Length: 184
Image (cartoon, rainbow, N blue to C red):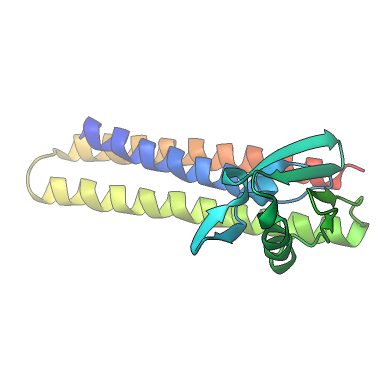
């Protein structure tokens, strides 16, 4: 059963990584190119991430400059950003697009904090679902005679310890992101 515990640990780590990626796309007032990761631009009929069709730089703490490799794409990228949930109005000078990130208001910071808490809860639910699947597998092994009563208890305890460890990791990431959002 030790191999299965390792499998569940890998799945839990993937859930933590997913939460971390989601957190990086939450705009906290500072310019971070990862906020563009989810925005797709129609590139000759194919939805393509901005980072695959343009150079993305952060010249200042509160701005991002997007310079497409094909200048014909400037308008398409601008429209994709406007349609997204980014909440930033892009400035187009014909050659590149500038995104200026204003200091978020207190109300906006509270909204972002709630968003982070929701993403955090989704990650914890994913980890608990992995634990449930693991517990089901352990019980099935016990029923099939592959585990003794003591082995079952130990496996269940190991799985619970693993769950607690990864829930704590998500809580730590959440606390960091909330502090980043609430700092002025």
